[in-house]
Image (cartoon, rainbow, N blue to C red):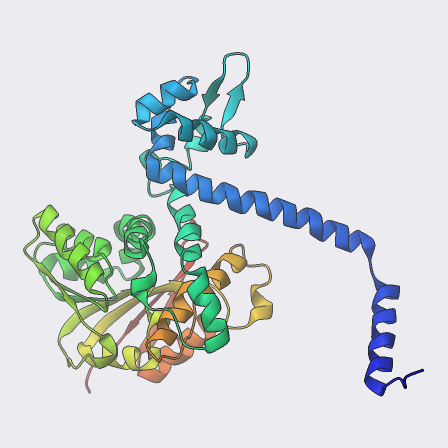
Length: 376
């Protein structure tokens, strides 16, 4: 008989130990959980489809409709609508009456799924699953090769981000965000110079420019596509007090120019976050304000185990935020860089009087307000 090696003996012992300690109930529970996750993830994709096609809006506040009636109302192909309704019915989003073959979107569900209820339309966020899945192959290759996937590979990223920003930031500016530093609204009404770093499609910057015509606004973003969308948005609103420019803010060379700088969900995506924060500090006038919104969470994984969107945010990080930074040869800080590291980096950049706040209705974000010290 062939000799048995030490490694084979150790592996056999380890296998026997695992088999002895194997918990069948735990295994079955995980299988059940996986089946639930599979169904729920598929449902999220179909909710995204319902949002993009306008099907939820067509069903909103309507009596029970047949599939042909809904298809005609939404201006869509009935065969596709019927199959989508199958997913919505088995997913318990839509109620189905087999006797009349009609479908109803309950008011309690429409409350979270229609454009009418924006900024609380959760179907907007459902779009991220498909956007991120669209680069799965590219990201898998980077697991093997290293490096990152650039912005231009993400189909519909800026469009989806614009909708998200309109709901989470633009809609909350006057009631929740600006009151974090009460003097800001007064300053904006009188007229100040404002920079929005990583402005994306410009929804937040345009909302501010429209509300405060005496102030002057500038938006910088790395992506030409986003700047084109932002410029179009400003033109559509007839704004003359705002300009947008494609610019890498890691190379920003501006000093003592702005009274307010905003950065909404942007710093952790950067190639060199510390450099960007230092550049923002330099761009501010002495005594001016930096308002930064980022993802709520800890820098320590063990503290995020009970995060209500923990898996979602680490997935976004892997599939977008980390990889777009790495694609630029950057640090790849990731979505979940965490509040502790954020505060440390803000301090290192020179900011003082850092205040951190969370909005009671927003489990996703955290807001930091701070000042550049006045010259002595």
